[in-house]
Image 1 (cartoon, one colour):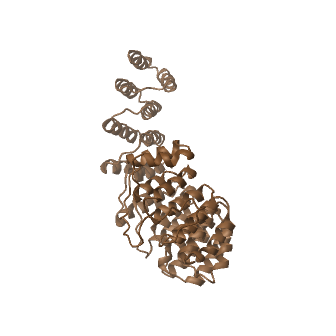
Image 2: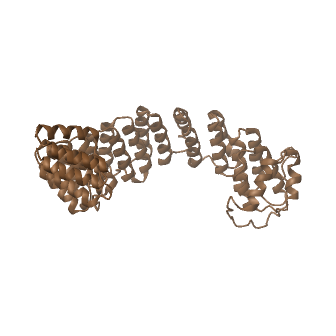
Image 3: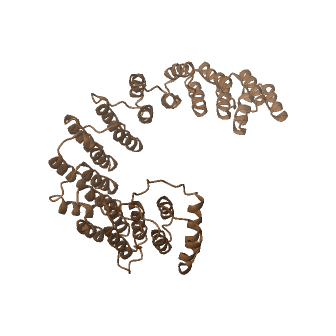
Length: 477
């Protein structure tokens, strides 16, 4: 085994015979006492005294211990270098330990030292790999040094590491993770694509970059090249997902639907994850028309099965756009897909019926909710009571109140106040007094503004005695 130049502090003298077996990899818990002790030494000991402190701590370094300490030492690169050299005096470092050291140096911007480590790794057998260069790519790109990252790719073959599509994708991914640098990734791709044929992951990485930047024009160009180079293939789902998401996020749902139809005709329809994400975006944009079109593409002959969350999102969107008949259609279809409505499903539709003053349908739907043991929310109950009174159906309003008293452990103030006002408006003042007294006994708070309005109703009807019963009750409570 060749040794590194003496000037390289990362490469200790070799102590392990070339044919010796490497210990099986073991992952130590970060709270292992030995790990904590060594990390404490590295963080608190001056570098001039560090080697002595490590040697006198009584801890014998083993590969898994070294790796655990390195994972926790990104904030102290100088001390970590000394620890790495010290531990290397008594063991042969694993490829993972070397890669961690390269990553620590690169993430701290110590690129000369990072290359010293890479050169030392080259002299070791079997430690230098594509993962090493992927780390270097990431460190350079995170520091904004895109040109240096590309130059690193250009020389990696000199270190015995292949410039294959995996390496290309690693570099593209590192570049695209940086804001506004996808064009640099695309330039590198254009330069290398003739020498290293791209795969579906290559295009998926570029699409994710264009998606993050909202660049639909470049995404469409990249998509066209992908079809030319790798053709239509259902295994390229991640690339299709990223491309379509770019269009949807950029408020071009019509374009996305157009490409979806083309993909479907080529048996390359994206998976449920894309449709779920796209539906979320359309819901945020309150775009029910394109959501309906997207849904039809998804469920027609694709074998995809939407879940309860997707049904609820769709029903809520339709209700927000007053498309109650479509919402009922979706409700009826849910069991066929193995999705069974919950309280959120029913409350979205119930709220829509209330908002649109569809009293008869709301009353029937309320009965169905009770039968299915899917209760309306307190706010929906209050709104329903108000709507039923406005639509001249006090019996339905009282039915909602009775349900609240039977089912809710906590009395509902808003519904109570709506009930009293509605009864008063219908001239049912004896009912007002009776219900008000019961509400006060239950600890329900009557709003002062409601009490003032009730006072006017009682005075106009010439029944102040009934009002006095309420006020006396309030004083006792």
